[in-house]
Image (cartoon, rainbow, N blue to C red; front, side, top):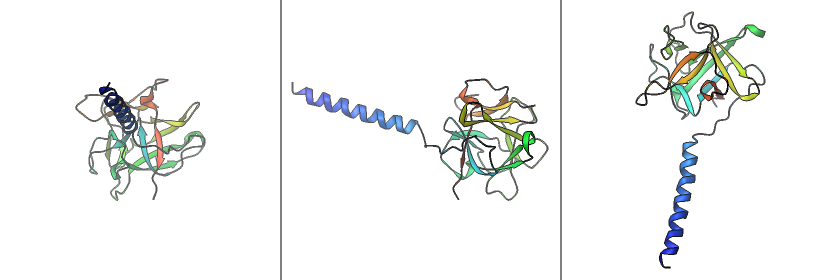
Length: 182
C-alpha cells in the first residue's frame, strides 16, 4: 500500500508531461488570414503544417525549404498582388532584402524552389481552397497551375517543396498566410 501514492504521483507526472509534449508538438498558434476575399498585398509568414517557407540564407540561388515555424526574419515574405478579377497573380519576395530575392519555382520541376533575381518565372496564383476558409492553394504559372506542396525527400534534410496537380484532402497542399506584425 505504501507504493500506491507513488504510483499515483508517477501517473500524474506522466499525464502532465504528455500534455506539455502535445502543446509543444502543436507548435506556434497561427493567426491565419481567411480566404473569403483575394489575399491582399502585404508581408506574411507562409505556413504548411507548422512549417514555414524558409531559405537557409538571404543569398541568391538558395533553395527554399519548409522549416519549423518560428516567426524568424527568413520566414517573412512580401506578397505582392497584381491584376484584377481572374487575372490576379502574386509574387513573393524575401522581406528585408533590398536586392530583391524573389521566390521562384526551380527550372526543373522535381527540385525545391529557390530565391533569386526577378525573372519571368515568379508569378503565382494564390487561390482559396473550396469550403476551407483557413487555407489557400499556391499555384505556379510556370507549371500551368500545378499546386505547391510539401515533399519529404529525405528525413536527414529539411522538408522540400514541389509543384504537382493538387490532391484533394491532402494537407501537404494547404497553405496559411499570417500577416507579419510591424
